[in-house]
Structure formats: structure tokens, C-alpha cells
Amino acid sequence: MDNTRNETSQRSERSIARSSAIQKLLNEFAPCDDQDLLEEMIVSVCRLAQDGCGRGELKLLNRALKELRYAFKIFAPYSEVPKVSIFGSARTKEDHPQFIQAVRFAKLMQTAGWMVITGAGGGIMKAGHYGATREASFGVSISLPFEQTANEIIANDEKLVNFKYFFTRKLMFVKEARAIALFPGGFGTQDEGFEAMTLIQTGKSNPMPILLVDEPGGTYWQHWRTYVKSELLHHGMISPEDMHLFHLTDDAEDAVREVLQFYRVYHSSRFVRKDFVIRLNRIVSPELLDRLNTEYADLLREGRFRVEPAALPEENGEYADKPRLVFAFNRNSVGRLRMMIDVLNSGMERETVTPAGAPVQAGRPVLLTADDDE
Image (cartoon, rainbow, N blue to C red; front, top):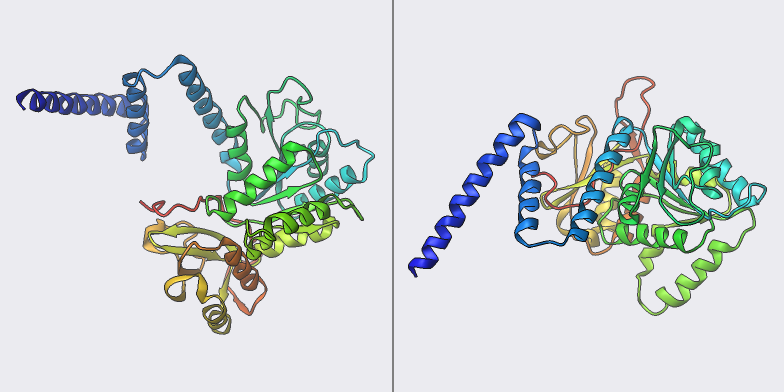
């Protein structure tokens, strides 16, 4: 018993000494408002050593952290500019209707005030940069033994980020995007599309438009939807509401309208403790609020939908002047949530008072976590 007490006491003393040393280090070399999180990261590093973590695992963690830190730095100056991530085959030829369609879509999005993110390679990725122009483009490249070199439009641009790992690259594609556009492609395109849908379906990413864009008269995504309906939906592997998580079209203008319509009233969202908070570009009318409480009560864990005129205290002033739709979301169906957002965007609402000429933009990415206000 005495030995146990001594070991516990020694661990406590070491923990206190470690915390003191970390605080001294942070105060001198990393002064900021988030030192508590930096301390937790350094403690995790210490524990990796205590665990005897192998050199290979340490190299993986080290490289991943470096990649993400640099990517965050590059994207940070453009945090308030909405972006669409564009996926598709690297092998699509420049005279192919799919390439031309991607150029058209990217150009229209750039004209609407958006930037594009692509994998920086050829094919559809190059088409996205060509349409949006270099100035409105980000590239998130991946080191591969074949195919993947930066196209000449984004090569050597300061907004080009090179990744070794797919998982860090994929995080940036979704974290920084306010919409996702998928053009015909191979395994990579399918992977990115299913992952985006999974993240949104499970609430790990905020709702956003997912566009499946064919060439005019094309059937690539129509055949994909047929498979999803006949195999996944028919056998109960997804819910009927999940079919509302994506929009299929063969018209670039229609794809752009789908994105802009999504952010007509909806601005951004987050959890504040147990409440789901949707920031709004416009005030919801009493009539529309009554409709939501009637038709979408199945989304509620308890209570009713309510409107707040400005930010909740726990939001620390983020988008403080925007009205809110607040409710206790039961998290049972993001597909139904998307359907409700569509009604919100197309229903009866009243304009908010904003400065003349002020643009309505999509909000910054905020992951759906129950404790992101803490």
C-alpha cells in the first residue's frame, strides 16, 4: 500500500513539474490565447515517448502535423471567402465535354465571388483552375508515383499546398469548402464523394451542397444514382432522406444556382451545448417558423424551433449581428435536416437590415461538435 502511495505521489510531482516546464516554454515561445490546447498537445508528445511509440509512427505524426499547420496558414487569409472543392478525373482531355463543363462551372462560381479548391493535377482539376483563374484557385496536391504533378495554372502559386498523406489532404478539401462539386472520375472521385456524404450524413461536417455534375446529356452520375437507389436504398442501407444530401445535374448554371440557393437564408451552423444553432442571412417569418414547428418536429429532441435576434452568449460574438434559428436537434437524420434547410431557403422570410451593398457570403467551416463552445 505504501509503495502504491509513493508511486502515485511521484507521478503527481512529475505531472506538476511537467506542467510548469510546459507553461514556461509556451510563455516564452508561444504566447497566445490558446495555450491550454498547446499544453495538451505537448503532454501528448511526452506520452508518446512514455509509450515507447515507434519511429515510424512518430514520423507519421510529425509529417501530418507539419502538413496541417502549413495548410492552415495558407488558407487563413481567405477564411471569409467561400470555396467549392472540385473533384473529377485527372485523365479527362481538354476537348471533352466534361472538361468544358467543369470550366464553365468554375468560371460561374468565381463570378459569384467564390474560390475553388482542386487536387492541382490535370483533367477536371485543371479545368477548375482554368475556369476560376489562378487568383481564385487553391491547389492541394498529393505526392504519387504517377499522374499527379501540379498543372501550369496553379504551379508555384502561394496557394498550392503539397501533401504526402491522403488523410491530411482530404481533411482540407472538406474543412475549407462550403460546397463540393463532383465531375465524372475514377476511384479517387468516388472516394471523395462518398466520404463527403458520410461526413455530412453522420454530422461530422456541417451541411453543404454536394453536386454531381455530368456533361450535358451525360449518364455517369445517373448510373451512379441508379446503383445507390437499387442497392443501398432498396436494401435499407441508407434512408430515403439521405437522397437529399446530393444534387444531380448536367447543367453548370443549375449547379451554381443550387449552391447559391443553399446560402440564400442559411449562413452557417454549430452546436452550442445541446442546441443546434443555424446562423441566418435573413430573418425567418412567423409563418415559416410555424411551418417548421409543424412539419419538422421530428428533428427535435425536445421543445420547439425558436428564433434569436443575434448571437448566443456562448458563441463569443461570431457573426454577432445575424439572427439565429435555435433548436434541440436530435441528430437522427441529417437528410431531414437538409430538407428543412431547403424549406428555410425557399420559404417566407423577411430581409435583415444590412449595410447597403454588403455581400451575403457563406460562413466559415465549423465542425458539428457538441462542445465547440467550451
